[in-house]
Image (cartoon, rainbow, N blue to C red; front, side, top):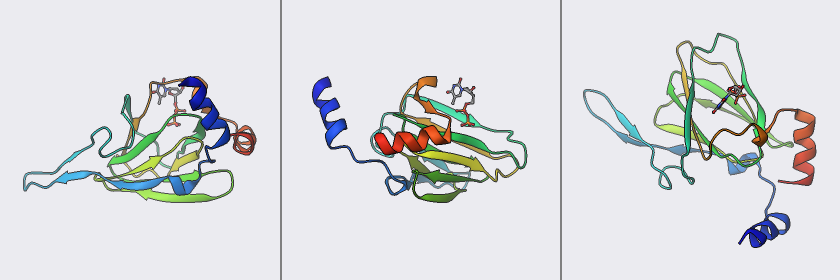
Length: 152
Ligand code: TYD
């Protein structure tokens, strides 16, 4: 299995692009007393959620991100407020304004991302496909460009 997976990766896997990333709708249960949105593994997101983290109290004018992941998939939701996510596949860039708790942005591996324009009190909820691993990060943009040329 391992050998087959590696063979497929080497010979058939295309490079990920910003077009592989998209806004996905989250189930919304509307109630007069307030709404509930539900994310389920394999149903709302095309991966199993292994980790949840959230960014909050981001100072005005601050930006986050500035890296890519080699394997990690993420689903980014504005649980509250709004912010912008700029995705970059090494050739094309696209900025998404994330501002609804019932929609999220799927970010596939091999995509550079920057988050900015956080509104006051905003909460950026991130659902991730694996546990934290520092080795999965590419934090240097030139390294990222070289990675995209050679790998995915
Ligand atoms: P980082 O992913 O670089 O944050 P952002 O993309 O929002 O700017 O993480 C910032 C710091 O937090 C970094 O030192 C690693 C640590 N961290 C963890 O220890 N575990 C985690 O799950 C995450 C997301 C970050």
